[in-house]
Length: 266
Image (cartoon, rainbow, N blue to C red; front, side, top):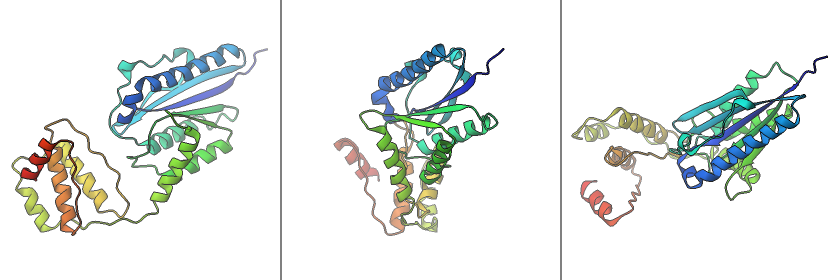
């Protein structure tokens, strides 16, 4: 008589934002140790359990599903050449989308067990589709289905950090900030004076920043780019928009040379 095996789905959500670079080895170790634990459980319960792995690696460039309900025997350890931290931390988007997709994929299997492991060091700062309230509600619903959630972080009691994170950003969403005015004619005239046409990336950055500024929701945004790629022109446009609404601008640079350069050009 053939025994039906219990399917156990292991969803690992791994932060790949820039702040993880300083703890890159710890992050890789955390993931690989988690994978090792799953392998051991599979070997121990070979006749009764069937383990699957989903690995979602995320930063503001997007969420990449390296494994998607892959049998544990086919899941390899993650190496440093395949894990290069960069950009910002859309933690809510990564958790919300990954958890929701897995729930939809296995909703017909009422006997399945699920363990979600979230590996992150930092705070949410760039989600666009999910917010703290929605993610917290989703997690509570999944816990009601018997799902288990574990948080792995560096130098933190991550269970507390995760809860405080959701509380912090849920509270922030209730704050009302200053909604800047739409671009004025003076703003348009000012921008037309720039010598070079904007690149597609610059244009997108300016559009997104202005959209945030014109919203009453407090803005969290980090603009990243290599030297010479036009970050200053983006910043000047945002600063001018702020001044047009009679607001002040704080502009910080790391060196005296850059401070003088910006003073001469800004």
